[in-house]
Length: 119
Image: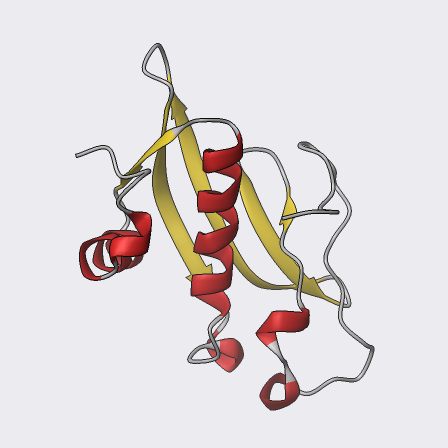
């Protein structure tokens, strides 16, 4: 994603103060990389995150965890986070093993991830 913070940045993605969960527009949120994952925060509170483990020697990331806070579920947040990891993997020529259940189902059901899926 163009304009995204560099790897390791500890800044958080923020939305306007006082925005209710039902008013969140995922397309206006920008996941921020923190370590081996991406997070979304609203006023410092975690909205969602996805984490991955770099696998040594095989140029691959294992997605091991996807979480969205209950108030924000069903709004496309998990897909936004997954797509951010996939975008970064493509940029770095990495493959992905979707080990968490959410990532696996998305990879299985959507051919848009076929180019990065290490089976």
